[in-house]
Structure formats: structure tokens, C-alpha cells
Length: 378
Image (tube, rainbow, N blue to C red; front, side, top):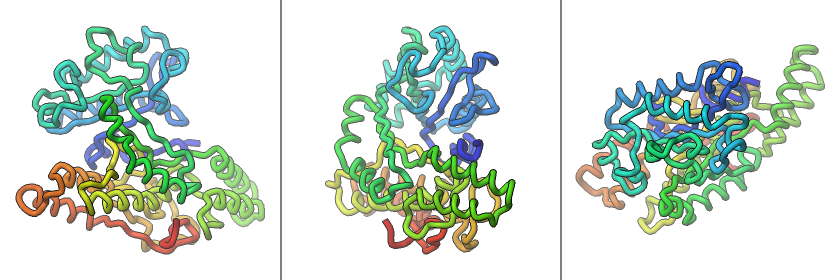
């Protein structure tokens, strides 16, 4: 169960150190312990406050950085009341908010002086409005006097493409269509935040396959016919041609497979944006994805981030491959910020610096069909 709830191996501090500037944080109140905890399929061991404290420590140590945080129970940005946080009273929510204010204080945005979507980054930093929280059921949490220190999570256009890794052709097309649509501008026009998921989910059918396989292995060993049959069913549920004998046994394994194909998405959008300043294609305000790795990358190779043996049939050669996720986003922002004029000056200097970073972890495909990596598909 735990392996299919774990979306990241890096700690929050490590993610921030490696270029992440948007955090999708899920939380729920535990009545027995009278404490908030993180929630993703399973409840965290640490209290939610411990993660917030890590954020505060990091933002204090990096006085020119800005961080956007989404706080909900399970990513459902438009829910309110009991639907948003079942069984949690307004008093408990307001107590949390007062503790949140005490922790972050003056580094929180104040929308009365710094409207988020019209205030420059320089001004946000100069005013020390560097934590921007979008909060689900925001009116129940905040008081009238402090309402300007948080934004309504309902302003977030949370775009989740359901098919995910199990239907890569449809998923890639739909994501590219979204990133080349007016949806990004529409979010900004209503002071919103456009968020696109590039993650995968712990599909209940695949989780069941993994559980059944492990039970059979415990009883009969790896070579039983039942294990082979279930592994084949699990592998085929990913719908990747030729992948028939590997069943990713964790969310991170599946996420790294998804990340391999997410490279296409990033490169397609960058190609469109680079070729013409009139392109309607571009990145959203934020992504949420899994399997983040060091150096601003996500892992595309077959070695699971938490270690362990390679999948059966996988080769060492490409086990630790990574893609320059963060530097690709920066590349795009430089291109747009410099209005495609990168022939000289600071724009050219920064552009070349980021291109060199991208070359360290380039878009890379290879043939390892048994573990879902192909060069000719989708």
C-alpha cells in the first residue's frame, strides 16, 4: 500500500533545492490526535506542520525566491464545507489558519497591495510577499481581517487528464491540445492559476494486481504460473505495445514510465514556442508530477527512486536516465520574457546557460520494450 501512495522520494527541502516552486500539499485533520497530517492514499507519519516548518526554513534561507502552495484534502479545488474536509469544523479550520499565519507571517502575500497575477516578481520579492497559498474552502479557514493573505483554491484551473500512462497516444494529444488552447490566458484573466497534471495515478486494478502477485510469490515463489499470468495482465493494462512481462510494483515505477513519455510533451511545446513568437502553445503556471530527481530533473530510467533491484529484463545502461524538467521550464520563461529576442545581452547569456543545463539531461529515447520504453511510440 505504501509503495502506491509515495509520489516523491525527495523531501520537500530537497525538492525546493532542486528548483520546484509549486507544491501541491494534501492535508486532513486527525480527530484522535487533534492534529493535521498529510494525505495521499495513506496518512503521513509526520504532522502537516512539520512540512510547513520545512517550507518556512527554506524560504527564510532563500530571500529572493517565491513559492506557490495549493492546500486541499485531495486536489478538489472547488469543494467547500464538509465536502472539502469531512467532519472538520470551522473552529478547527480557523485554528489551523491562525497557526499558519503565525508560522509564515510577513512572508505571505497580501492581495490588497500585491494582486498575484498583476504584481511583478521583483515587487513580490521587494515586499516580501513570497508565499502564495491557494486554500480549499478558504472562507471557512480565514477571517475577514486576514482574507487577503490567501487565495481561493477554486481559482486554480486544475487540469487532470484521466487516461494517463494507460493511454499515452490520447494523453499526449489531449495535454498538447490543452497547452495550445486559450485556457492558460483564461486562468490569468480571472486572477487564477493554471495547473496541469503530468502524473499518473495508483489505478485500483493495478494495485490489486501487485497485491495478488506479492501474495502468490510469498506462497509459491516467483516462478508460479499464477504469478506469470497476473504479471501479464498487469503489464497489458498499460497498453504499451510489447510490454507484457513487467508489472510496475509501485507508484514511482509507474511515474518514471510516465515521465519517459512526458519528455515528448515538453519538447513539443518548446519546439512550437521556439519556432514562432506567435505560437499559442505554452506551459501552464504550474505542473504537478511525480518521481522528481536531483538537479531539477524527473527520472525516466528504470531504477526506482527508492532503490531495489532493476525490473526483470531492464539494463543498467539506462537505469538512471533523467530529463531536465526544471531547466526546460526556465528555458521557456526566458524565451517568453525576452520576447524571443535572445541575440545578445543578458537574454542571450541566460539562454545559453540554461541550454547548457538542458544538454546535461537531454530528451532521450531508447529501446527497452519489455519495460515500456520505446522510440517509435506513441
